[in-house]
Image (cartoon, rainbow, N blue to C red):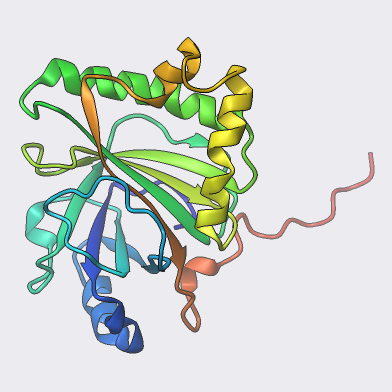
Length: 236
């Protein structure tokens, strides 16, 4: 997960026990049409999961398939019963790319009424033009780039995914820095109008918030150096 030029993501949620034999699943996922990369992630024991979405059963291991090409429900492999397929939302990522991504936080959110297009657009505008930019501008150590996605099944929760990529390998530690620095940025916490507006909006619900740490596998191609090492700058 070293750049955000993908067209979508497939989340495949598995039991932690699968970590002892990832090769079969890894091969199946890499063979999917349009799959550009597959990375594996562990949910730290004891990490908060926020408000659970009913469709998300308890799981400890997450596979993420990045696609470059059409994103259609037909690409989901047989046997991936616990999955969500997302398309890139047509707005840019925010932040600074600091690969490789070693952990991340996901925030899944939905309008209360999934059929309310106006509320869905208001949610996106709040997230893209206020919530996420304020996080980026707070310069929270460990934060890198944030990218918005939308559930291919727009009539199901979660409607939107915000993927917050971290450059450190302890996602819980990075996430723990967020709230104090945002309080500092707004000059106060609950009761401060700017902070309260940043925190949430009455037109939507937070479905799921948690962190994951990378499972580094032998010869993991997505841990490549990026951008390529540069030659020494010539003297002026």
